[in-house]
Image (tube, rainbow over all chains, first blue to last red; front, side):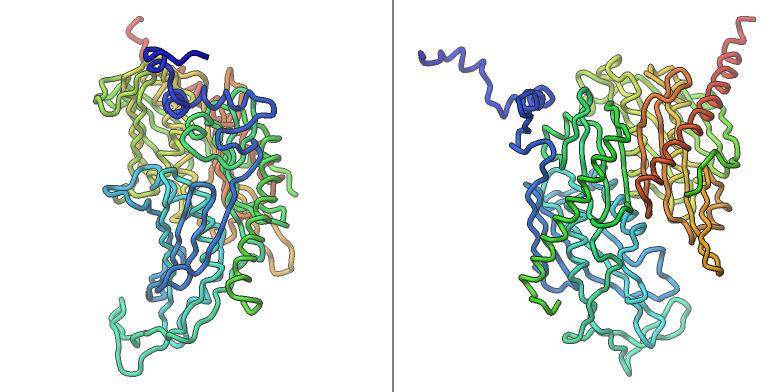
Length: 300
Length: 242
């Protein structure tokens, strides 16, 4: 074949440029193959590979780093003390940030942050009674700071990091001080609290199998279900979305968000996604369990 | 499992065309919720937000009390997901369609935002009609709250509230098992497809599908309410012909 002429070379574009300019067409070319495949070389129902590392951060009650495909989320759990009377509806506050971005948070990030807070509230991950400080009217409130190392707003990775870090969270024993006091909201006094460096208690979660978040896309013309969307191309080409929070081994769901865009999403699509989500939840449970066993041995 | 049917619910009322400096406006009242939406456009857009092939959609949600927080961003995102695909954005490229949602009374309790979302979706759609923005089909939304209380005798009573008022919600607040906000697309008064469904709590696949069916019936009724309001509004606007 003769060498391409300079003129022809300038007209032919690289696949990356094609993906930037016409993501929908680029995506459909891949899906039109037999069997259909995605640009990331995953099959439509294939999930991203996931790895979890727990207790990576110092100075936290619990932490985890979760990686799914190209998206990484780091979660650290800390806490602060409030008067029992002042505790709001939740004993767990979540905040999601993107690493390396300055300036005000993007609207997608704010709405993901709100989704996480509401889902954490509704799923009742743990009994807040465990956070009470004995002998005082004060209680601990947990704060989960989640950092995303990825440009895509991946709610399921952030949620996975939250679950994994709560699964290894240990609440240090609170020791009310004998001589120092602090003034409370109603102008009474309470003993100052300090935390033991040696004694701690594992946070008991309300779930044996954790409620993981799994997301899907539904194509507009073909109704094809795609598991675990990732990347700019898939995000631009697939408008129909189904996000499910569920745990393996039960038939109850904690969260189901369906947003059709221009696609037609039927009950069958949803049924299919729920059963795939339960399989994925079981897979993530075993990844987390084996990581905890590997790190802490059988005594956890 | 109890069979769900449209329970007693307060009717919704809608009024339109009462704001002067915008292209369209609507007010939607259902139960204790009251939302006002204004729509302006298609109009001039700054170069930074301009899109070459479709109109830019800007949605702003303002709360009833306090400053806008992540909650309003969440509502904005969900309203956009419902209303975005229904507006014929490609008919007005390089323009802006601006939607401002003012929550006058959210009708929710402190921890929920379902009533505000469903009422905002309905109000937004009415305002788009009033502004004459080209839309492909009708949209209507509803809120369904499922609760279950265990009585002392050991029995479990379950119930379902559709578009509840705030006092109704506060009464069963501790026993709420799941909350569903569902929006449908309709054509010619018939359900065409599901547009949005946000379900939170503890529920099974069957429960949520029953909620979808109940919501479909409710959305057809809401569509009827919208049709009456639009008919009245068109008669008023065309009054100069007489």
